Amino acid sequence: MQRGLETLYRVDTGVEVGDFVIDEAAREALAPTRKPREQLLVMEETGEMALALFIHPAVLASLDAGIGRHNVGDLLLAIEGVSHFIYAVQCARSERPVTQLELELQAEVDKYVTCLLHDVDSSEALRTRLFRECAYDDDLDHAERERYEVANDNANRYAAWLEETFVRRRRIPEMLGELRRFYREGLAGKLATIARAA
Image 1 (cartoon, rainbow, N blue to C red):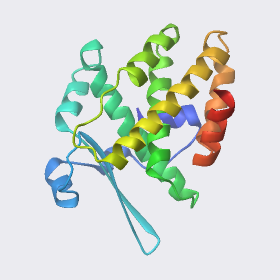
Image 2 (tube, rainbow, N blue to C red; image 1 turned 90 degrees about the horizontal axis):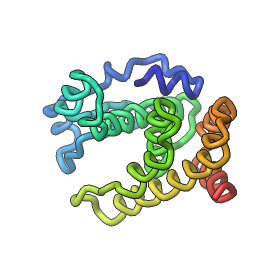
Image 3 (cartoon, rainbow, N blue to C red; image 1 turned 45 degrees about the horizontal axis):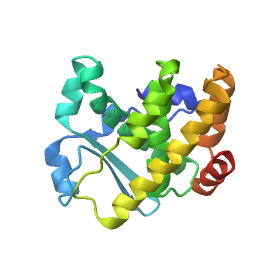
Image 4 (cartoon, rainbow, N blue to C red; image 1 turned 30 degrees about the horizontal axis):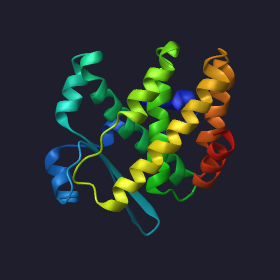
């Protein structure tokens, strides 16, 4: 999954996400308040960034057994975590600050694109599943829920534009160029692209 995203965006973190995956005990020690099934933990001290990624062991076990319709939700959760990890590392390497909204928006786009590239004909159904039929955790506070909703709405609009402009016309190589350009934009650039496209 990491290699796929890094190849797609032509980036190289130089680190293995697996080396940063922590178990439930470590996550409990680092972040005891919320317990989502996927969580990127970031700490910055004296200009150094420390990262840890938690993906629930049941999700990892499900994916280790193979990927199919029965565990697409687990796949999407893992894509989200790996996306957060790669994007945070890339921003840190560029010495560019990144917001939680930017991480969430890019992860939503990454989930759409990763699944789309495995089945180009499923774009509209995929957008429905990812962006219209999504459910939010009940334990999200107002600010968190709003962040997820904004990321979801913007990713849906961007994906709809990708579908109309590139997917339906079978212009996939051009779409990949657009996705690489979008990936390198900061949040303001991403939102401006979406506003122009939608």
